[in-house]
Image (cartoon, rainbow, N blue to C red; front, top):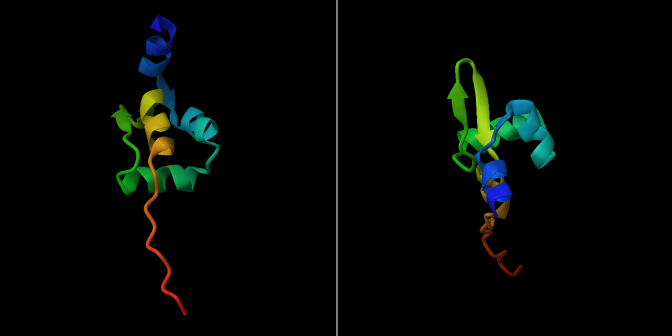
Length: 69
């Protein structure tokens, strides 16, 4: 439990967040700008909490049902 809290409090760099989510740079930016992922600007670089990355992946994507054709 304590180890889990320490890992969640760790700020990851942009590159580390890309590797953690296994997404491209543009996808990570898209997640940020769409509001699905919270990033924190530290100086001139972006940082991400591991917990926020996990929450972004855990969200359900709502889809609209297709109309019968």
